[in-house]
Length: 417
Image 1 (cartoon, rainbow, N blue to C red):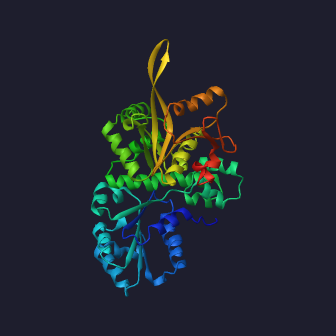
Image 2 (image 1 turned 180 degrees about the horizontal axis):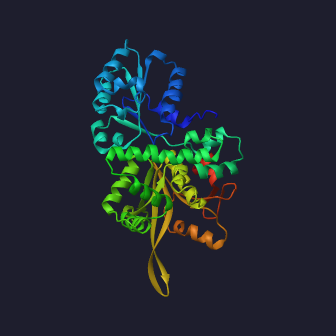
C-alpha cells in the first residue's frame, strides 16, 4: 500500500509546535494515530532540522517499555534523555496506560526546553476530570480514519468504483492494504468485538457485551434519523425483547462517544438561535465500522453518504449541528406550525454553511422539498446542496450552490467555490 502522507494533520501539528501546551492526539483505536506521530510527524521534525537524539519517543503499549508505565520511571527516563539546552520533542504513544499520567505530563511542562505530544484512544483519556486537571494546558488534535480523498491518493481504481468500496468498507487504514472482501469484513467485525467492546467492558466493568452490542446495532440502523433514549429503549425492547432503561441507554451512548466510535449531532433552531435538547442524530466515525455491525446488509447509500459528509466536515474542523427552521405554513385558511430541517450547519470562526445532503433530485417537487428550509432562512450565509449525481458545481438563481459528493470530498476548499 502506498503511504498516506496525512498532510493536513502534519500541518496542523506543526502549527501547534512549541505552543507550550501538551498536544493530545486522539481518535478511535486503529485509525492511524501512532503512525502519524511516530513515522510521519517524526520524519517531518527531522526534515525541519531537529536532531534525532532530541526526539524522545516511547510506545507505551510495547512490552519492552512496560517499566515506563510507572509515572516516576517515565518522568525520570525522559529527564535523563535531556542533556543540553536544545529543544526536545517528547512523543508518547498510548499515554493512558500510565498510572496517574496527568501529573507526569504537567510536570513536563515545567521543563523549559521540551515540546510534548501524546496519543490516547479510550474514554479514560478524555473524561471530564482529566480535561479539568489539564486546566487549559492541553491542545487536542482529533484524528479520523482515512478520508475519501486520502484513499483516492493511494488507489488507482476508478473514483466511482472507489466510492462504492468506500461506502462499504470506510477508511480504517489497514482495510486498504487488504485485497479480499472477506478479509476486510472480518477485520472490521473483529475490531468491534475484540477491541472496542472489550475496551468499554473493561473500563466500565459491564457484565457482558450483548446489550451494548444490540444498542450499537440499533444506532447503526438509524444513522441520520432523529432519536432519543426513550425511542431507543422502545426499539431495543422490540428487537431484543429486553427492557433497558433510558438512563442505561444514555450511559452506553456516552461510552460509545467517549471511545470515539460515534458522534452526537445536536439540533440548532436557526431562527430562534438556540440549541434544542432531544431528539438528536448519531453518526459513526467510520461507515465501514457501521456496516460491520449490520453484517454489511443494510447498505442505504443515501444515509451512508450523509454520514460521510458529516465526517468530512468534522475532519475539516467545522463545528457541525443539525438545523431546524420553524415556520407557519398556511393550510386550509389556517396557519399550521411546521418544522423544516437542514441536514448540517457547519461553523468555523465567522463562517457558516447550510448544507443539504440529497442523494438524488429526480424532479421539481424533490428540488422544491430540498430548498424549502433554505428559502426560510433570512441570513446571507452560503447554502449548499450536495448530491450523488456527478455534475460540475453550479449555482441556481437564488445563489444555492450544487455539487456532487465526490467533488465536495476531493476539494478541501469546495465550500468556498
